[in-house]
Picture 1 (cartoon, one colour):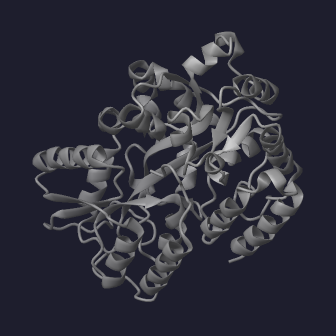
Picture 2: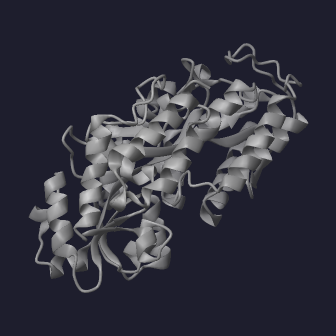
Length: 421
C-alpha cells in the first residue's frame, strides 16, 4: 500500500529502480513459465514446488497476518508457502526477474505494473480469477494494461478529512458545520486557525492535492491515459483554490510546519484538520493515542465528490513453475473472509465489494473512506508517469508563491512526453 509519502521517491531510488528494470527487460524471462501474456486456466504451469511470496509490508502486523494466512492456506492445500517481507520491494523484484528466479507471488504497485507487464515479467491472470467481478471497478482499472487485467487488487485506501474534535468544539463548531463544499471547508479552516495552529494541513504532493483536482472535474490524463490533461481549466481551478487557502493563512503544507507528512502535523496538534488516507488511523493509535478525532468524507467541489485511491495487487511471475497454485493462493488472499481478517489485523480496506457492508459495520468510524470508493480515482500508471508525478510533487511545495498555470504547463509537457513513451 502506498502510505505516507506515496510516490515521493528520491532521484537515486528512481534511478536504481529504472536501471534494474532495464536490466530485467534485457534478460528475456522466458524461463520455465509456459503461461502466455494472457493466463488461461488450461495453460498455467503446475508443479510440486513450494510457493515463495515477497511482500512490501507496512509493518509487523501486516507481515504476521500474511504469514498466518499463508500457513493456513498451505495446510489446507498441501502446498508449502514461504513469505518474505522485502527491504526494498522494487529492487528485490527486479533482481529476481533478472536472475530468472523471481518470487512466485508478490505485491505490485500501480506505478510498477506497466513496466513489468511490458517486459514480460508478469502473468496476466485476471480473467482466471473466480472472484473477478467482486473487485471494485476502479481498482481493476488500475491493474489493467491493454484491456488485460494483470493481477488481483490486494486492498486499497482513499483520502478523507480528519478533524481534531477538541479543536472543533473549542472553535464553537458542531456536527452541522462539517464541510460538504469548498466554501464551507475554507470557512471552518479559518475558524480553526487559532492558538498557534492552522485549520488545515496536508502534504505538498499530487497524491493529496489531486483529490481537489478530481472534485473540480480534472485529472492528469484522460480516462485511457493516452492524452495529458494536466493544464486543464479544472486543474487550474483546483490548485488556485488550494493556493487561496495557503495565502489566507488557514492552511499550511506539512513541510511548512516542520513535518514530513500531514499525519504528524495533525497528530502533534499543529493543525486541526488534515487530508489523509486510512493508514493514518493506525499511526494515530500507535503514536498519538490521546488525540480524539473523527473522519468525514472530503467536501464536494464544483463537479461533485472526488478523492484518490491507492492500491497494490498480487502479482504472479510469468516464470513461476507453479502458477496454478499461485492463482489459488491469490484467490484465498483476496476472498471476502480473508480480506476482513486482514482489515482487522492491519487496518486496510477490502478490495472486494462483498466485504463492504461487514467492514462498515465493524468500523463505522471509518466508513467515510469506503463511502468514497465510487468517486475515487487512481493515480496514472503508464510507464514514465511516476517520474513526472514525483517531479510535480517537488514543485508543489512552492504553490503559494507560484503561478498555477505556469506550474501546470511544465508538468503538462512532461506528462505528454511520458505518455508518448
